[in-house]
Image (cartoon, rainbow, N blue to C red):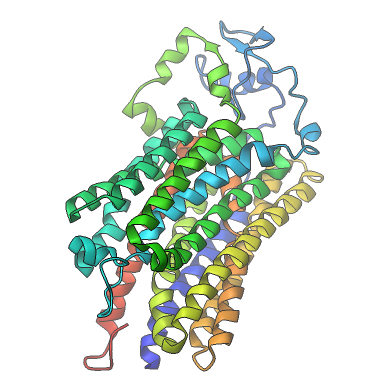
Length: 497
């Protein structure tokens, strides 16, 4: 195990984490207020936007209910007003949003991650592999074809559909979109189990990418609309732990594969997906979009197809804070994906006698350290935001900026932790300790970042779709890192990893 082969693989993700830290500092402290005048009612909001356009109304937070319809002054708009909406302060003491909203969405997200990641653990290219447990031998595809399945086949349509999913979540019933998407990737997973050739497997993987794209835009906008403002970071972080639990289940699929084979394992994963779709249909409250009404002839101009979508993107990217968040998140995605893809091959090479121990350790680190990091990061972000809300004239802007301290500090601490994890080659236990530290500080970024982004822009679904797209494009980073690593390896300088 040569030091030069360790250095390149460890430095690039660390540098990306530090870059994300630098851009995070910019988004937190160098950006002035993005929200403009404080709006406390629909009438105030109409007054603000009427100065820009005489025909457009842009509800900032959520659509009102049919009950208690009132006229908006100066317009033919009939808008519903929710009589129970007395502000966030009364709702902050209620935690009903956890079992009725976040937990059902989290179960769906766990199924999402388990379905899409299980492929990585159901192939085996070693000499002692057998068709019963190795999908690649049973169906018959090469390592290059596996690379296409694992990356481009899933990401290509996933990336394109992410923006469409964001637009759909702004317009249509998000509960129905969530249930249909879960059914979609479960069908694709079931199709994978019954595939008899590579073409069928490829088609199922593409379908899975399309369905999975609808999970996060619908979920995060629902959370942003229904959870009190002083709990949004915690709620999004709790939902985000689905990545950790789903990833842990995917890695533990190896144990199931050894007992019942890859086909029955895939069938079991698909059945779990159908069950999560059913639970979300039963537990999730119906989306308020289906119970709201806005009757105004002038608003028909809002439905402009492609031009309207471009206008929405332009409105989102007008915010300097949003642009900094997208750039920092792209780098953070690149770093995390590089670590996720290359850490397993690296640690198996560094500690060949601890391969089985590493599989269990990685599952535990992902589930425990990753989840704890996400929850703690969301809680701290909400506390920082609440502290800022109590002081200052522009409390909303100060609150959003304060939340970004969590991902900024987390990224800054994660870079050296990762460096020490891959350089602790003398002790497997020491390496796993540093890897646990890296996960614990790094995974705190997601919830605060999402809640800050959605609090900065008005088109939440489109903004979330664009955020998902940055993650999809970042999937190219592990491939580029592999090319960079290969090009910098000295000829004949030992075996490649």
